[in-house]
Amino acid sequence: MLALQGLTAEALSRAVDIDPADARRIVSAVHRGLWGPGPLRGVRRASVEVARARGHVPTLDVIAIRKSAIDPFVKVALGTEDGHVVESVRIPLERPGRFSACVSSQAGCALACAFCATGRLGLARNLEAWEIVEQVRLLRQTLGPGQRVHGVVFQGMGEPLANVDRVIEAIRVMCDPSALAIDARAITVCTSGLPGGIRRIGRDLPKVRLGVSITSARSEVRRRLMPIDDVYPLDEVIDAVEEHARATGLSPMWAVTPLAGVNDTEEDARALADLARRFADRTGVRPRVSIVPYNVIDEQGVDPFARGDVALFVGHLVTYGLRPHVRYSGGSDVSAACGQLAGRA
Image (tube, rainbow, N blue to C red; front, side, top):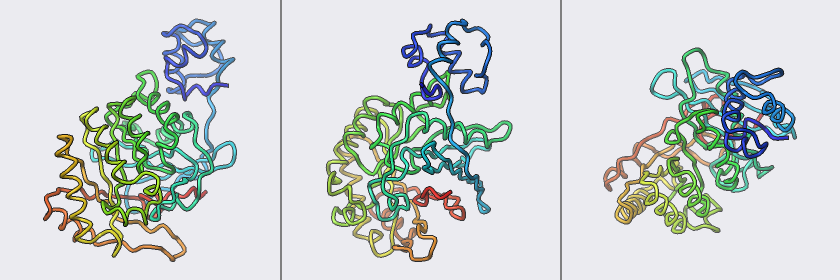
């Protein structure tokens, strides 16, 4: 059976061979809660019948909704049909009533980044396109009157570009005016650095923004924290990011999480500034450097790292000519902050 919420109107029209206008109205009904038994106004009965016979609207089980007591972040734990738990986060934006949905692309993750709780789980499986879309739909149900999901960040559990086909399918549904109608420019795909996937996003989704976990511009440090660097060294990743920037004209977001005594030194700051300068010289595009304070990932108190001195590290970056942004990573009291998602029911 086709999961109807995981299809664009064009894909539905092709899949079940119905009129494109009927497909648009069916997809719209699915995403507005109007899909059910009986006829659908303005749609041919034959189109409704074939869509109902070939498709359904599955969902994820809402296991828990945890609201932070310190800020407006909300984490939702969702259960898949085969027993996995994935987590999504509702992130408040500056403009009242607007939120971003932080979604997961995999159950678990195979990349084992040392500072990420998800990386400790290993990979269970990729999520289907409809399971990614459903996270946004379920987060929308937590909103009040006048509130809406304005954007989406692929920064939850998993490496999005290790599941790039399904991620692209899901984003196309999110952007479809008949479905979730989210502006592609308000969607960001964040990666640990898979060059092929980066090039694919630039080619297939040129309006979608790219985020890259740099962690350290010093190869020996990055490799110790991110095992993926053994397979795709930072130079190869940056080559792909440069291609993305030239093709799209979009500034990539480079994320760094300072860890005390590991990657928060003046030497790290200088190396990062040098890398950013070379990137700008070669592409004409300046990367946006985002400093993400480290969040505790071991609730038992045996954490492998301590938070680096963010203010000092930022000061070093400014000295070397960068103007970084310090990201507020909220919801830490309910393990909703960056790096803390671990599929806990």
